[in-house]
Image (cartoon, helix red, strand yellow):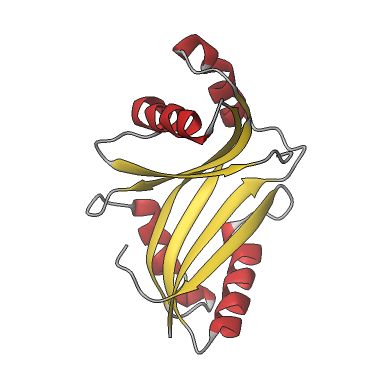
Length: 87
Length: 87
């Protein structure tokens, strides 16, 4: 069974985010008002062939903990949906 | 009215993604099988104060086109939900 997976990696609350801070600081001068709490993270998409949704989720969670995210400063949110789409 | 916004920036189909390709190539040797079409993009989250959802969406779309994404090689997907959460 094939799953479409999106892993969003973002910095944990309290960890400095210079990239987000720079964007937030620049926006008013560029004519964009009302933006706050800008945070920049990673979005990793892939397809995964697994027996069922539980197997897929286990595999993705382990992958996130071990390689995709740095658990000291980052947290990962996994969205998993059945069905294949071309990337 | 305050909105929680997630902008996912990903490379357009056909644009080389060396980061994704490297992850995909490494996974089998690390004990992770069944992964394919790995793509790495950006996830930008922020809060936006706007009069209504349409105003918010217009503002975010313009921001994506002008600054957050490079429309030549990247596409942006905007998810917008009402209500404030702390980031």
